[in-house]
Length: 552
Image 1 (cartoon, rainbow, N blue to C red):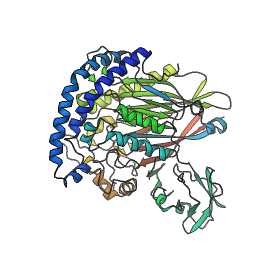
Image 2: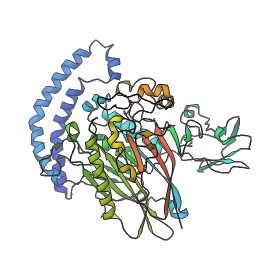
Image 3: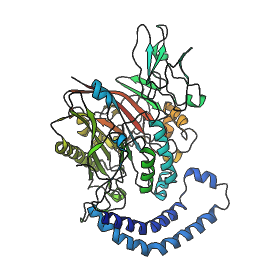
């Protein structure tokens, strides 16, 4: 069944719901401002320290917003009586579709050649109401949403250019995901001590003349625009390295041509709409405002949900089926949000035999508080079951499954003794984690994705370029990435002797092979740690490029 753009089945319910929210919004906004005026981020505190009028601003601002909150509260109560009962008949997401030309986008490489690559990305944005975001040292939610949307669109929308070494002994493509030319202009690519012109800027392949005296590992990207040099990454040096079996990089931009994007903590509705507006020219299919409000399940005695799940999914390919489940075991402050699992099935096209090609993409946001691994393990059990049920109900005999991906904010890492339960969960026997060497052990090149909140605006991490340099430096990294959490009452030394300092990696992109078609083979082409949102969120986005080959 085709997804509906409105979360309501009839217009009357949608209009009544909108009217109720209009009555609630002023009171909600005044309460938000009342808290926000008293809670500064560290960046704002630096500025206000030099302003003698700041105490007066807090006092008078608090009084004004408190009075306005009290005055509008009766109207909000009336709106709540209209809004809350309708949550029982609300679908758990809004669906935005672009024009027909974009809706029909397919993966032509996979259709015609039987091989291709898919790029996935995940980011936690902390787009809570402004007052609550400030407790994570992030403010100005609406401005951040606009800036984040522009940043992602700029990174994803740039050309994806492959570099080919024209050499007697090597003619292969180095093909990193951001071997790129910025969309503005650049007339040359080059190599160390050598320059080469680009035959055709509109081509996806750039040929660099080379001879056997120059090692491929010395090939770097150059751009005649010096401002763009920092965005270009070295191919086989520290920027895009291969230690063991997985190429990886720290990139100042999102990978070019991301196919499916998963965002977490997009709790604010206006922020979700701003992201949708910014990303819809690139992603024809967007699911937002995912999750339920009020009591979930409806008419139950469960805790009241003031916020949705915070999940946001943007796809280049048509979403043919989608299903959402809310975790019933959340506790504390996490129980106020409808965190859960979004499972989707996307249509990728048809192969030469006219068989449908589909993929499964799943997004989650697990329980957050430290020391509550048992709750997260129970949620992982639910995730495994719900994904299996969804795929069993929607799998058809006349289609080939090309990928099965699970990503999101898991809220546990693979190095903290406090997260031992989750690290050993059976989910990791089903899904592969390209960053994981085993339970409790990361691969040596991995970088933590949770930033220390008090230092978000330090010079070392307040721009994409500076954050990139910091993450690539082992000594600097441990000052700005959250350290592992020790088990209660147990001493803990980190890292072990001769091991790199990694920190907490709680943002994952996993893939599964035993659930895809027997004719498909997958291989990780690249893992990315992305610094483009420096200063805009307290997480480091991650990316995964997955190669797929189909046997004829």
